Amino acid sequence: MVENLICLCANCHQRADSEKWGEKALLEYKRLPWIKRRFVEAALSKSNQNPNASLLAESVDDPRLRLLIERVRQVFYEHGLEPTYLARFLQVRKAPFSIALTDLQTDAALGHWLNDERKIDWISKNFLIRREWIDGEDGGIHEEFCFHKQPEQFFATVSEQAGSVVREEVHWIPEAHFLRWGLGKDWKRKGEGGVFLILAIPLARFSNDRIIYRYISDLQPYPWEDYVCNIEIRAWARLLTVNELFHRFYQEIPYEVGEQVNSNRIFLREVIEKHSRRTRDEWCPEDYAVYPEESRACKEPENLGPVVEFLRKHNLPWENTHSIFPKRAGQTGGSNQ
Image 1 (cartoon, rainbow, N blue to C red):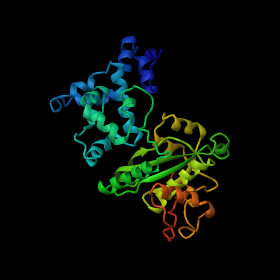
Image 2: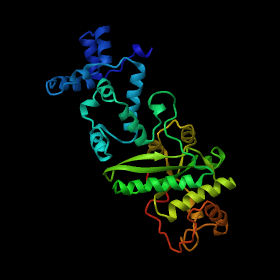
Image 3: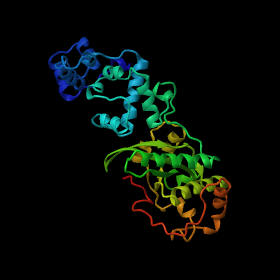
Image 4: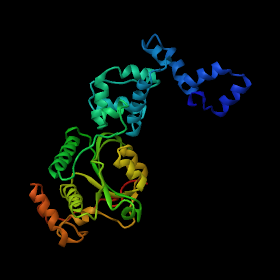
């Protein structure tokens, strides 16, 4: 059973043998290993300065509460928020509360900090992570949007999110990631030509290498060779390109990762930063969504009509801008390693 297992480093393993640690000592070490014990002892030495320091020596016995705490930690981690950045992030986002490093040192301390529904709700809404997932009610992680056959909703969401970046003075451009479902030939063989669209909206910028995003997607693969879905994905590409609201990236992901995206069982930052790669054929949906006068990379302009008609029908921008859009460096293949 997991309760009877313990993982020790080489030094502690040697100490356990030489000092003849018994079952009681091992169980105590499992409850509070050295890395946590170090923070606890330092915090307790300053107990006169921190009235909540005793919390650092307590464990969390309730499994549901433990799960909630673990998932809040996971939300922070999966969005690139290390403990040293968290207080600054809350300040930048104008959160109605703050956090100290001691609030993060143990599960008991973090549980005490979370003893306010406003904080959990704020975390859920700020990152668009489902409250049901944080509470452990089900496994669906991200809030799911519905863009299929709702282009007005797509354009409103895109415009609102891009506008929020300007209003909040983040000083970084949002990103749109078009991801083919399947690597190489698997895209059409296993993924049936599916294309996911993920929007990354910057929330805070600590440096050029440390940008904190929220992620938006309907988590649906649009089959590239399906007539209706092809028009939709090209329309999304045109709206994102002509209006220059977003940096655009065109990549592919393993089929198994796409399954996790579709079932909402994986954090989208991980998908983009760890699993996506540039396509070998330089596939780029926006090339199929622009007029020849707008881009020298225009492909199949004779098939642009249905996309323009689709946008006109829904009162969305469709006009020929008669300008050349140079591609940004790295835009075709994305920014992942």
